[in-house]
Image (tube, rainbow, N blue to C red; front, top):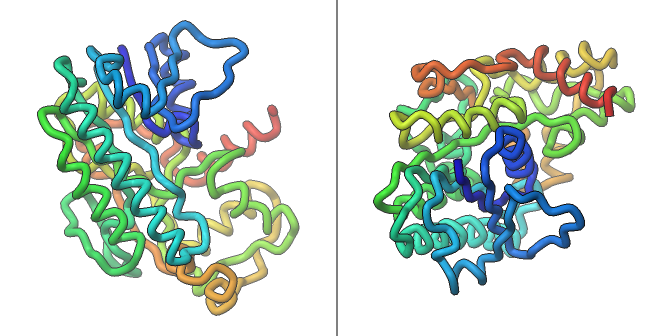
Length: 303
């Protein structure tokens, strides 16, 4: 296959590129800044947005386009940061829509990143792809605007991949989440009752590939494990797998003081189920948190 990917130098994007290159696919990465390549691969090409805006024909005949680009939510949400987060997402989606519209041979499918935040938060509800959107906080409003902008991508099969907490042993949020346990001061955050929906890095890579291969899939797809856990259970499992104590609770008020409005991500949760993936027969390699963390630990030891 020939696949173009925006955000191919990020955490999930980089893993996707590696996965597809190993499978023998041709990958074109769209990025803001072209890298200096010492050992370029014949199956891997980099294009800047400026190049493609001048020469959109460079992407003619692609089988799929994946857009994962966007400023991270993992930062203090100042007014400036909020504007950058929203603008980076909406602007990139608009660029993708314009690019797809300019192509004579359009990709069969566009996979557009979104986030599970679009469901809002709840201590008791379970969300799947049929659950209504709830614009209750900044992350949910960002996700709503993100998906609304994606609707401008026309004349292709459109998949909106709603991403949960992605677990990897080197990048993403997990190394920071694990750090207190490695220092011996791990424990629940806030009440510990808030839900954590998560997915192993290789499962989200395989799921994105699955949605491209499966022509029956379109619309929202939850990228989350079928077994979400509470924050307390998440911490206990980290402690068990890494043989560290789970005993030092972090008060919610301290989290709010340290990270400000970003605390809603840590103190309020969602129990999200990947119903569409399950209905279409997707098999998770790491369906439980213990299995996922054992694999990450093994990867860390083998580095």
